[in-house]
Length: 257
Picture: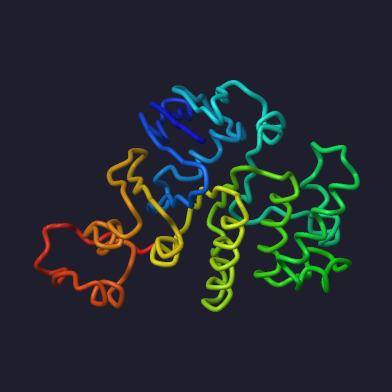
């Protein structure tokens, strides 16, 4: 479905990504893990053509080359992004923000039907549909951001840090809904700081460090990878997974993300 080959992203003389190969197959949830500044958002921005940067290499979606394409045409191809920070229009209502997600469409009846489907997925938004987005809770705003992306009828939904700033209970709900979206037939590329939660719902994952892929594999294998255990899962998860004492490891501890 999505194939990145030799993907390199340059901001002037600085490389945010270097020769990245990544795939998302039809029906999968693939998570992309990495510390702040590793290049995760740059990868999503390269796919959606929303970066003020030079992009080299190849990005193919459903056999169509995307490098050089405009962002609106990429949305029409079937890719949607729910960005980090949600980026809602605060002075518009929840429903107005949702409808903006269908800006490339002209099928009014189908748009209304999809809006109804979003409300079935997120019943709270039906209650809040006339409320200004800036007055919604963080979890409700995240639901609007995901719902807005779904309004374009994507084949691939990309989510950038959907759990950021949310309470643990809301994070679990968001993850449950991501899995439900995937089960409806939408493939998902998930950038997430909560590695354990992401890997629990993902089929496969990649670990990005300093713009390069340094590990990849099934979600279960990455849950046992000492690099991820030491850097991203924390002491409780490390003990639960049966990892050796980190003081006996040669892998340097990295900050939590």
